[in-house]
Image 1 (cartoon, rainbow, N blue to C red):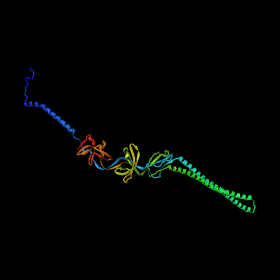
Image 2: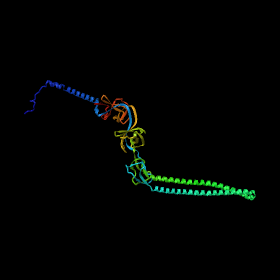
Image 3: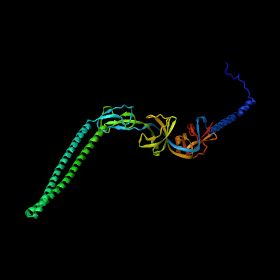
Length: 423
């Protein structure tokens, strides 16, 4: 029976190399671990102090230059007719529109009529009253002539009586000398002469007074007729105004009422668009409203064609955070304008000569207090002070020199880094 394998085991003595390996194993393991820790530390330190690099082809650069900065405002707008009057009704009635929207009309052409029976009835009544007053005036003239004839007869009779009394007085003078009449008859003849003279004098005064009175009465009657004639003429004008006429040459814009609608006085009926003169209507942001001024130059862009105009009016009302401004300009032969044609514009607010400026860029999105300046293929974040701004450039007050190169686009890839290596 075999108890174990101890009889088969052979003891082998270790060699010199194995003894040396067992002696230096622990120091080698410790040294390797130390070298590994050192390498990891150096790698970590090198990574923390390196500069991240970005491909320069992904960025856009601009050079700080010196020149004239044109401070401007970008706006959009449309072409509107400078003269587009709205026609209104003059009286209450039923309207008949004679021209369709888009029809060409000439000045003083009737484009609508209003039927007003009430006004027509008033006109006929006042016209009849005028005829009656004119008839009364003619009758008054006949009565005046009759009165003049009557007083003329009285005057003539007084004159005859005066002549008779004078003749009797002269006869009495002759008879009293020969004592053919008594003193009493003689004195009575003198009294009759004096009485005749008084009657003749009063007849003359009555003739003058009657003439003035009749002239005054006829003048009053004539003034009343003239006043009534003015009333009739005014009603005739109002009836004529029921024919709504186009004030300018142009086209019918829009109907503002329905055909055959019953309308009130001063109600808008339609618009007439004068296509011979255009203006540009711009919508300017409210924040720039205080910078606008009448007479400022405005550059209008119609595709590749640019025209310079001037601000003609600025609306004091703000709608949808915008201010409406009108621009007057002289169209060129190259332009083919039409109503409500869209356009873009630049309002030229100010010219700043001899200033440092750079093109607009991403640095404006961060408040404009810093920008990345390129030096030896390294973009470094620098503090800057900016001034006036235009649509394309920004004034640089401090923090840059002429010829400096700035990164104006693509800085979103820089993150929070203050220095970037460009490759």
